[in-house]
Image 1 (spheres, rainbow, N blue to C red):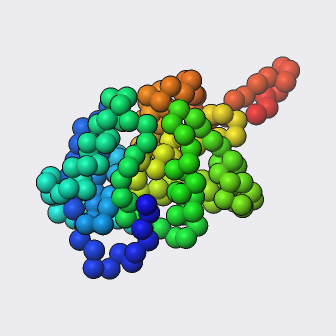
Image 2: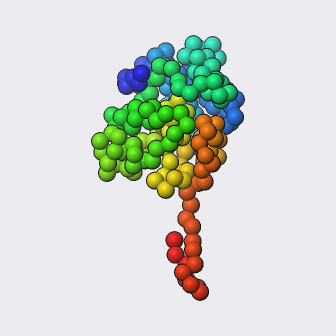
Image 3: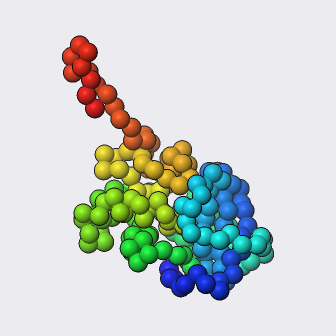
Length: 188
């Protein structure tokens, strides 16, 4: 369940955990998991306060347990209370992401159509990039319409690792490919 309460008066706590995709910082309130931050996360990706370290917080302990199960191949879906902050549009996108089954991918356009706003492909991409609970809300399962990997808060290598863990065939990062159209002529 995704809660959308105001961030005022919330107590945030965190703990770190090792994972196959690097060290993750788990952030929680007493209401639920508020964030999963990447080792090299860029500043201001999510409007999240990390708070004091609390390795014994029950939400963080449960989140770490379920993530370890996921990484070991014993979990396909997460059963965690979430307490994330975002705009109504972002929360709509994040809810749609949770419907993507384990081992499957969708394009940004697929998600835009799913939420009833087919012209919002770029806005879906922006909301996907601001997802504060990567992995649990599986933004890594969203790829470009050409089937290539596109941006991810944890980096494209981590995205490829997560998809491989789920049995998705190897995906290449999206890139500009130049082809020759004759001597001295190149086109994208």
